Image (cartoon, rainbow, N blue to C red; front, side):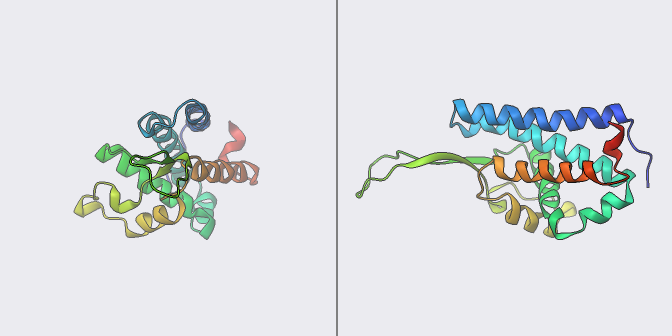
Length: 171
């Protein structure tokens, strides 16, 4: 177990995650651009994983909870953060809306921004393959609206905040 980050830095990561998630929500209200959504989505992923990593390094009870099935979204978070940080891919795509040429019967699906499937992202370096993380990502992120997994992460952190002994009590 390593020494925990100072509570001010934990607070910074906590605030960074929630502020980026809020910016993503605002972005999606004003734009359907996958390019525009990538920026706050990637920020939320970065800050969420930074916070998760600090908690794992400093709190064995957190690490144990993280190993439960509910922790799958956090394993998926780690995998996509690594892909976003090390390969610089576009991690989301736009779905729905009007496409040309029109097809009969004409239906217009609402436009949504979804996380890409793992196989649509750059491959991991051979020495960094994380099969469990990739599978967790595909279960918890891939093909889902960009905000849904982030809401699950926010709920994960809310549950952690209410756990007796959580490092969140100091922030």
